[in-house]
Every structure is written in C-alpha cells, then in structure tokens.
Length: 57
Image (cartoon, rainbow, N blue to C red; front, top):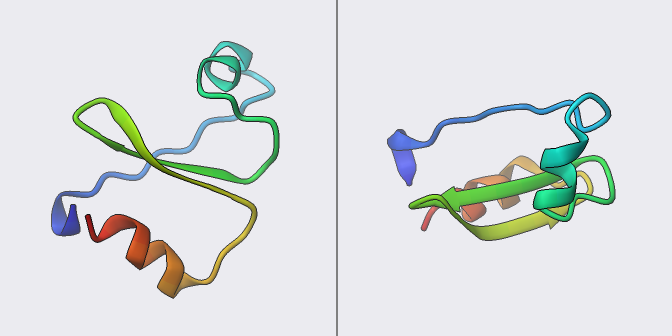
C-alpha cells in the first residue's frame, strides 16, 4: 500500500450497518482493505510500528 494508503474513520454508533457488515464488535478496530476486500484486521490499540507493518502489503 505504502504512499497510496487512505485512512478513514467511522462512528459505528451512527453507522451500525457498517459495523455489522464488517463484524466490528469492539472499538478500536482497524480494517485494511485492498481491492475492496478486507485483507487485515486488528482489534484494539497497537503501536505505530505494527500499523506500519499492516500497511506494508
């Protein structure tokens, strides 16, 4: 992904349909998409280095 990565934020309380669609049951949950598909998921807070590793696909 590298420099092409885009970051978005969703309030799952206000957008319950998205939370259900992607199985978000805890906050924070980070979903990494590629080609419209979830390719990685992390539940809970993580260090910056781990986020960088998630995006280096």
